[in-house]
Amino acid sequence: MVERRNSVDAGLRQRAARVVPGGLWGHLNAARLPDGYPQFFAAAEGCRVRDVDGNEYVDMMCSWGPIVLGHRHPAVEAAVRRQLDLGNCMNGPGAVLVELSELLVGMIAHADWAMLQKNGTDATTTCVTLARAGTGRRKVLVARGSYHGSAPWCTPSVVGVTAEDRAHLVPFDYNDIASLEAAADAADGDLAAILVAAFRHDLARDQELPDPAFARRARAICDAADAALIVDDVRAGFRIDLGGSWEPVGVRPDLASWSKAIANGYPLAAVTGNDRFREAAQKIFVTGSFWCEAAPMAAAIATLTELREQDGIAGMVAMGTRLRAGLDRLAARHATPIRQTGPVQMPMVLFDDDPDFAKGDLFCATALRHGAYLHPRHTMFLSTAHREADIDRVLAAADAGFAAVRGMRR
Image (tube, rainbow, N blue to C red; front, side, top):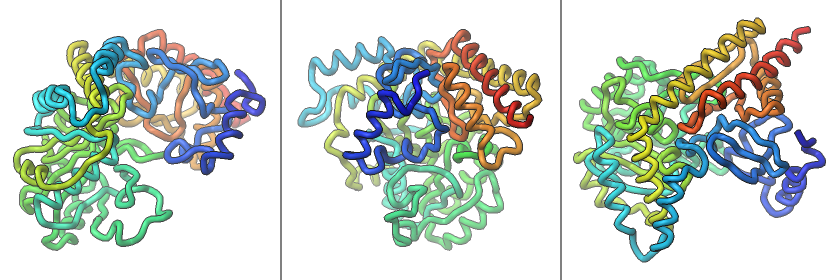
């Protein structure tokens, strides 16, 4: 492992600091990764990434979720090249817009129509706009701590944000029915929507799958108030169920937002909705200069087709189960308790008695030096490119990480 202070990565950081505010922005700047992590990467293939200093890692972040088939998947890359040979950013969309929309409507259980955007914030913001347009009301119930994007109405930062930006958000606690009911009462007849994450994946805390009773109550409140139930499937979409992440709990939303895994790393997002909100979708004005790019849509068709034909979710579940069981064995061997929560294909690993994340940081920094790129407090991601040998390499790196954490107590 190259020392970062004398590395190519360090030189790039110094150059970036002169021309980029803070050297980097957004979630990458706020990631709070341990010392020693690279900022710049040179290449990626399958489930491996290589930094600019030539160090290779098994990638357990999958570009923070978008890589679901593995980096540079042949079928996706071929579909993109074919479309680029025809055109990408044209005066209007290519035929792939219709083909992809038909695929989404045929695959996603609640969907009667689809609209395409570029990133998750576009999609969640469009959902909220649609809910307000379709109901004529303003209040949106949002779970405390949930992340729905970086626009002023939903960003986790308050810098540059006014109280007016969030004037009509009403908080509740995820999976807490009483809290949800109280928030609905507080909306006082002005309820436009309940917005919920596919599961509770808040930063730096144990993850929670949706309680079926909570999901049913959210659906019932929306039905009684003639409001929209919105599921934010940006992070979890196409890794839990191809029909929508709330299909396993038997509850379907009116609107859903999608991005990350939809096009295996190409910039694309989508909103899907039922016919109740079709008219509202025709009336609102949402757009972007690059929203009609054809190549990302071709990538999405290839990605979703591959996921369906190879039963990709089952493969990710199998590898996630192998990883979870292996980490539990290692934690027991090193007498270092951990908590693993959320879906196995989207791992979250936290250490007991670790309020300042010193254990998690040391564990991940050590695993990095042994070839595994993990995160100490954010949801991680598997792809269909992860195989048993890759998981075993991660476990070998984790073994070194557990040994380092155990050594902290000596």
